[in-house]
Length: 307
Length: 264
Image 1 (cartoon, chains in turn red, purple):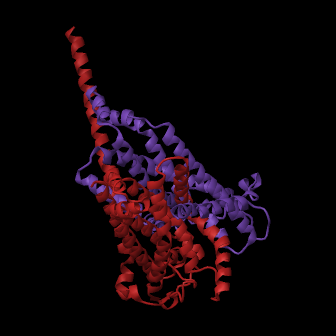
Image 2 (cartoon, chains in turn red, cyan):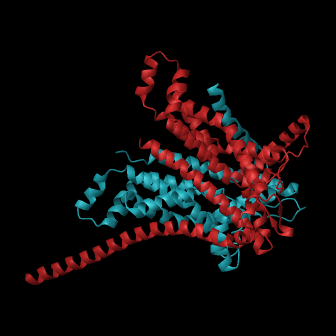
């Protein structure tokens, strides 16, 4: 009898030792995985900085405002690309803001439920789901001829491709980011505020203008920042329609280049190590700018949702 | 006015979808899916290497990213306020915001340089890093919504911690986790920029993970910007296939989220 009890106790102890070890392994592996993601991001930054060190040492700060990008003579100035990126992104942002805000208000205030709201919401999310090469492809074959005929009518050189076409494609692509976030923010306005305004005799438009928009102002701004972050980092669609000329664009209808598209085009052809390092420094600048903008946007959202 | 602007947003989308369907539909056939691209000037040809390459690269990327992402999401949802959790959340946000071309650059230096060759492996690694934030975020959000009583009931019955997580919590949140995973897959299926200098593209049929591999978005990019009509036709067909793939994955996500959701 006591023999059986001993065997049973021994089995129980062995099983629980094994269990505790399995638990420990599981917990440690969870911690390790999270640690590895942190390490990946730090290593990201590290790699970018180390690989662009030769260029930083050789070119210094003149890199950022040098006006000529001439790899053949080893002259590297990223001002054309900074200008191209800023022009395309801000133009796209300005054109897309009315659409995004209108959609956000429409889906958040007028039709929060219903079949039409579901349809519109799914359609907007579908815009974000379509791959960017398809936008670039369509833009190259459909939008560019249209812009070309428009330029003929206006009287500028009918390139077709250029900053304007790239901005148009970017506009379509970044609408969902501000629209979806804006819709959530508009829906979070407390009903008591809106009902109080209605009770005081405000019209629907006045409620939107004076209650909803000021309340969700920071949230809408965060959505705009997220859209901007997306526009800054967009590579493929822009590369296909912007014309890839590394000079300062003469006008909005001229071809140009953005930071992302110059990396995409010239990385595999970079002959000297200084050339490669200069391209990676552009990547580093792009990385820092996009990350900062996205961080600010997310911080605003977090502050807004935990109010 | 507001209604007009909102509806106008969707007009470009439908124009694009209809145009691609119209252009690509006539190019797709069984012949198109099975054959290799032909040299310029010869009619016919297909996109077999890109189809298989895309599937393989996405498969390997998912293999890397899904376990890592789910485990990280579990850790983040279990430990809300530890320092490691906060820093990890910050780094996941940073990863989500990085441009895809920068990811390609970094993976070039991590995988392509040491192996001295472009490879499908490096492409998969780049795409896996892009998948991670989406999977981690969706797992964390799903598991945070589950009530604590589930976990406490499991622990109270004497189950070890790993069994509670793997057998109780994860199956309960499977709809959210699966929808996050499928969303991530549909996102990376269409990514070109990280593959530009990691997987690089291949004119021949290859399933070797250590050699360059062609992929649908790469093929579309290269053939669309080329000067040959034959290649443009191939690109239209490939664009249609990519579009259908992405749309199908999105629809499946929506169906899964609705049907398998566990309500509390």
